[in-house]
Length: 146
Image (cartoon, rainbow, N blue to C red; front, side, top):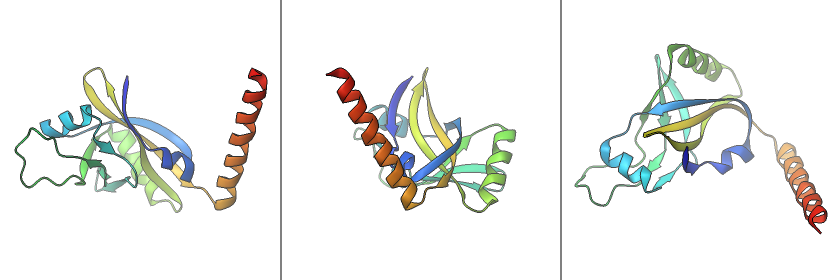
């Protein structure tokens, strides 16, 4: 499993409730750009339209060697999930305060997959608390080494 891109900001801004893997529909040139790590997941999110799930604002830079003239790097891309997972995501997104964001894109065998998470936004004091815990853990690991 090769990691292609990560959304580190999502881990800081959201409390993760549940994670799941999904396939993503891409064109050939987009796949080649993904394999060259030309992906940015920052600011992207997942929406539910009807009984289909889409990833919005995932920026995939155009592949240099392709002849795509009218290429939109942040177009809506459909995700491949089971009916049960789609139903669960759509129900959760209708709930107040719950959102769905992509955490990372990775290569599994020869397929490009995306790890998505149902999450709840953190408040400012929660973020500060997490930073304190991180710094304390870092300090403890540093002292244990010495």
